[in-house]
Image (cartoon, rainbow, N blue to C red; front, side, top):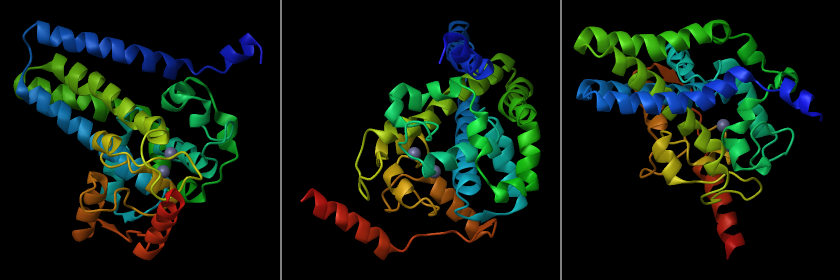
Length: 294
Ligand SMILES: [Zn+2]
Ligand SMILES: [Zn+2]
């Protein structure tokens, strides 16, 4: 490919945001401390927004829309679609198409959109610097095509993301404790950088560091460290082996708040039809891997 063809394929909006947002938000964070504006209200607001937005990606974009591991009522779907948009990781529709291709062609150098075989940085972030529309044209997702809420969010996700990820925390901090700057830059921009890289870790670290508990036919690894940063998504070997299961961490001591949230909502009927792979099938795979290691 010539240099001009290579440049024509660059997605400049993504590239500039992903490069500039960490620089601007860390500078803004430093300025916020330097001016003596630090306050616990904004710090807690940052944590709350970072958490609900990450959960909207893990339990929403990933386990609900990409894999359909359970069903949810309209309120839960709307909540995940609105706050998921605030993660600035595209619409749930495009995110899910990319992710389904990732599972279908995992580790394939050309077909897996964030293949670890193209290097750590490619899997982590560089794949987002390029346009990849033709690849997604081949994906058929009738369930997402006919989901009116998903299609509505696909149309308006930029506005939803701007409101729920930036305007809302800025307004809360401004009107409740007079810290518009902290609301916008700490709970908004800096938070978006944290959400970006937490999700990106799954495509990079979870495909090269950790245990292959259930299979070594793909690069996905189980890793408690990334699970801590991504509300349970780090048990990625299990997930690639059993993607229809709403759980990623299956043991009681596994840190998987996305699973706890989905299960908790099922107790009040807001989520239902939670899919689990049977323990005997899971154990068979695990024992086969143990036998192989021995
Ligand atoms: Zn993966
Ligand atoms: Zn997945």
